[in-house]
Each structure stands twice: as C-alpha cells, then as structure tokens.
Length: 146
Image 1 (cartoon, rainbow, N blue to C red):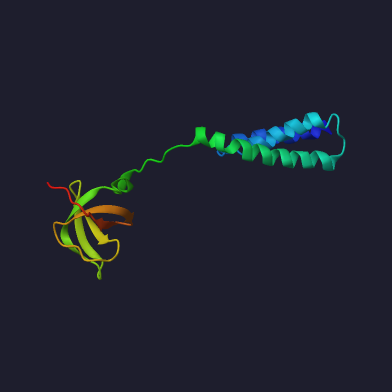
Image 2 (image 1 turned 90 degrees about the horizontal axis):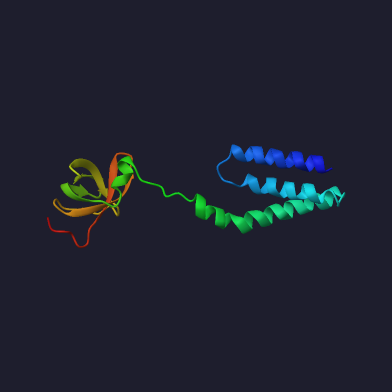
C-alpha cells in the first residue's frame, strides 16, 4: 500500500511543477505523510480520510504564510498607468452625449465624466478608469494652480 501513496505523492509533486499557485504541493506532502502512516495502518478508508483531512489542514494553515512570500504587486502599464493622474479639460465634457476631450501628459484623450455631468473647459480632472479609448474622469475638488 505504501508504494501507491508514494506514487500519488510523486504525481502531486510533478503536477506542482506545472502550476503557479503552490497548492498541489500540500496534497503531495499529505500523500507523503500517509505513505509513512500506511506502514502501520492498512485500512484504505482511514488512510484516505487522513490524507484528505491533512491536506485541508495544511492548505488552510500554511496558505496565508505562503501568500505573504508569493504576493506580487501589479504594476499598471500603458494606458492604465494614467489612472489617478490629473488632466485639463480642453473640449467641454458633455454628460448627455458622452463627448469631450482632456489633455494629460501632453496627450489628448476623449473623455467622459464619471457621473455623466457636464464639465467646463479648463477644469482639472482626475482619471478614474480607462474604457476602450476613452478616459472616465472625475472633477478635482481642489484643483492645483499651474
């Protein structure tokens, strides 16, 4: 019986190589522990139950610890790096038509106010999100002087 559990553990460890979540490893470790337990316990139902319970315990006990080390910060690139930046309205934003333009970092963007409000020319706005080729903006409450 121990040979089967050792093969199962090996399959899980090999499968972990092809995954990125570091989840399958815990099943492999559980199968490896059950391999040693199968030397003294011969009941398949008991061994399988131990394997399942041990897998769940290992996943929930160690997952936060592993996530702490595997956590990567996403870096906004391209147009999504504009989110949060300030721009100036160069063509008034019409909330009903969804038209208007802003200038940000020397580039001109089609823009729309987040709540479909009208925004006058020369108002300072902040980009909330990018949808397609249009910047969704919100008016800055306390504009900076330029």
